[in-house]
Length: 222
Image 1 (cartoon, rainbow, N blue to C red):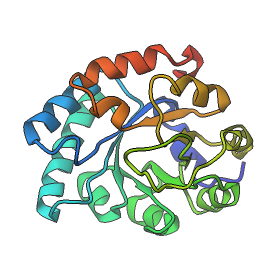
Image 2: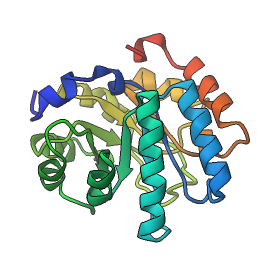
Image 3: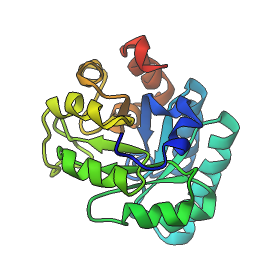
Image 4: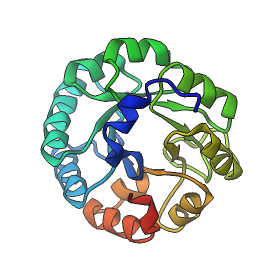
């Protein structure tokens, strides 16, 4: 195993496989909709919840993230903040960083050994190894299908998921995944199935979580 900080991963295995739900500021622009959707998702049970909002002022994002941290703590669901280490530190959450965002090693030094830290690796195993050596808890690959959330994202082959099994860490798949394709990425080797629009583009996010989970192999919910 190349990754550092294995103790942090081993201490709470529940988050390491299953459905990984990511918020969308455009789909959840209305605050009442945001809150009701999050409550519905957490009631159904997910492995991780990521807060992604790059479009609003810092005070608003802090208020939403603080509320999310309270909701996630009550449901025993780890909260991940997208691309903002300082916000993650302020609300006691983990963080997910992209290739052009904060350095993984710096994020680890800021958040401590127990924080869950994810890293975007597109389709590149070398990026994944570097992220793990710097203290990442999991690595994420994708996009695998056309994505309305990130239409310009570089495509990755499904084969990278099986190749990533050698890394010895949780492997997340992201990018255009829905109820039809989720079983395919799970079968290809993903531990964490990350979804955005597949949950929040519909009027009943809780029902969407149930449908997505029902289509995944039981082995992914270890």
